[in-house]
Image (cartoon, rainbow, N blue to C red; front, top):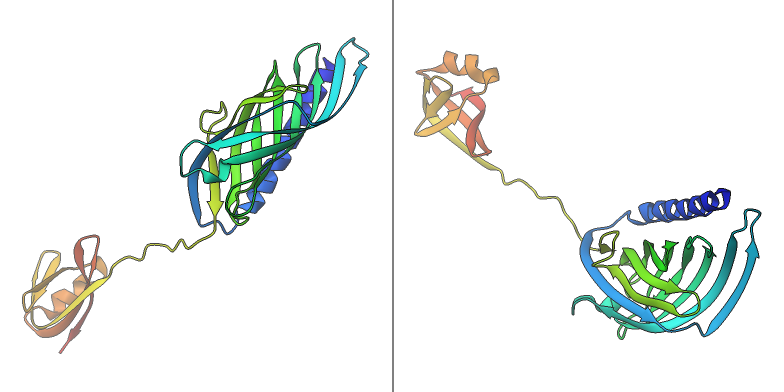
Length: 247
């Protein structure tokens, strides 16, 4: 049980560290779009393994391998996920209970531009992994954060892998540079000169009628029947009095 808790803690620390790195990385982001893809690999071309038995009789197996295969984008717009993929993975698995952690890097050789590269940290359970990948798309300024899942065998590789899309954890997004300016409200102003007429909370001068705020109510009342100039501004579909002066 102690070893199981240690593995779980290691996975949690790795995922928290990834989350902190991503949080710092989204500063300056001006766009976001959904992306998704899949991948699969064969057996490792380079492979190392070692094992040990814990004091409570569990077998721990540590592996390192380089796996090659193919990645595909879910749609034509997911070109950053299409191309040959190389996965360098490390695993530490309690083979007695079928739990552990798998981490490493994946690199997709995209046909145009640079490579899509991401680091991933996942939890292994009964032959499947699920976790988080973070890195960048073929445009190094386009950051990538994706839920990742796959079947995994240290000796056979990854199968049915998913980045975003149908992963158990959720979706994947790319965060890219660009312009994102706040919407500027449209301001419309009007003015008129003439004899002041007032009715309730509105004032009319030369056919221009505006709503009178409480702060100007007394001044409007004092100018009724006199010649004045009013200035109004449209806000939320209401023409509001902002200034009134005797002329």
